[in-house]
Image (cartoon, rainbow, N blue to C red; front, side, top):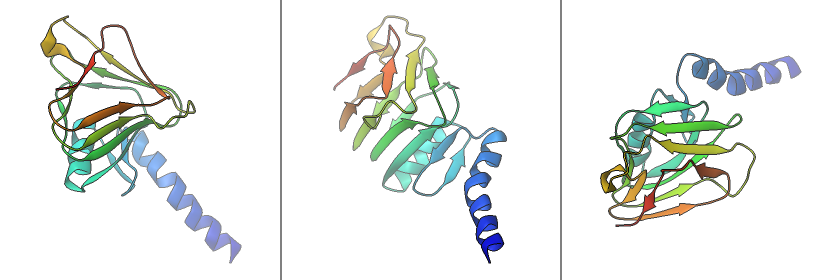
Length: 147
């Protein structure tokens, strides 16, 4: 019986790691589903009415990440960086975006190849709200702005 329980635990805790190794660096925590891009994971969280997105490895984001529900963005499995392309940004159109969870355990850095114009805001709320907690930092050039 203990061998069966151990086998089940190994499947539950190692399966996400195996899928992550295959190139899916974002976890939607509520469903344990892994995604190849932050854009896809945010769309799934929006469709589910919200959720926690855990970044499992550093990544580049080429296009806008749209938030229309209540989403939390966290680091996982060590320190990682989300690097937004010059034209990419995180847009909070409705709902809320919480960056971090108040802990420093798995720090997440958000960087942006900022061109210095207003259109290059890293996190931009056109509706809804943005909150930044410990555990998330941004590199110089990153801007978080309300409406």
